[in-house]
Amino acid sequence: SKLAKELKELEAEYRCEICNEFYNAPVTLANCGHTYCSLCINSHLQAKNSHMKSNCPSCRKTASTNDIKPESKKFRTTIELWKKARPKLLALVQQAAEGDAGAGGKSGKKR
Image (cartoon, rainbow, N blue to C red; front, top):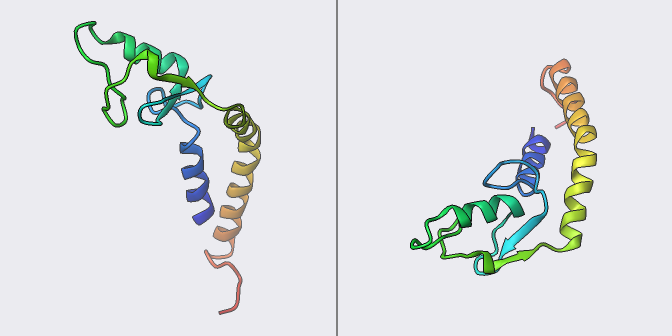
């Protein structure tokens, strides 16, 4: 359904591109604006050999641990609220899908 697709897109915004889990202590690279879990990006940037340049895993811009900035409190709170609401939203989407299937895939609206 359209709602399920939109919720999936929203959820992707709250997941780290390195570990694919919900952000844990989210931080942003100041030079490009991409966000990761603090541990994930620190590990990524420090894993490079010291003579090699480190980069953002998403856009490949040069990055270092000095570029790491904490995310806003509002963003961290939003992630926590999403994680609390997620099971209820999934249940509602599932109920809607079952209702559509029971109605033969029709929404019951007149055209």
